[in-house]
Length: 173
Image (cartoon, rainbow, N blue to C red; front, side, top):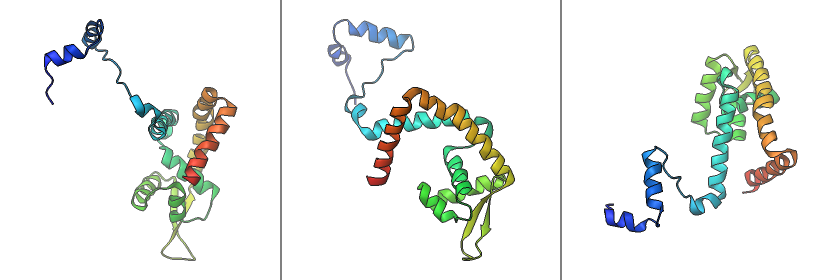
């Protein structure tokens, strides 16, 4: 789309043109107007998720764990002897993605797949000793750095309300 110089100038409000050009010249472009997008729940949820994940990654950077890997380790710890299909399904991770995630965790000696004695086609997941140690450190970092920052930002009542609302969306939508 081509815009003429005349059209650009005529769309500026009096007094805004110089300011807009000055900001751009200083490397500070004007922020985009989000309009209705800022009122779309899905958009705001995604933006919040990105911020939460960024903070999570910073907090556990020394352990090189993603939120998905941390979630898998937590579920395996709390559900010993469950198979990989159950863990993947609970977390909503597609099978090919889950296999790659497990390959990574196994290559780092954090968990192991063991052939099920009940169903030879199935594998149960277990944490290794190293996996248990890494998870213990990760839980401490997440609690003291990540979750505490969220608690500080929201306060206990808002945190509980938000968890309730998000759970309702996750379970009923």
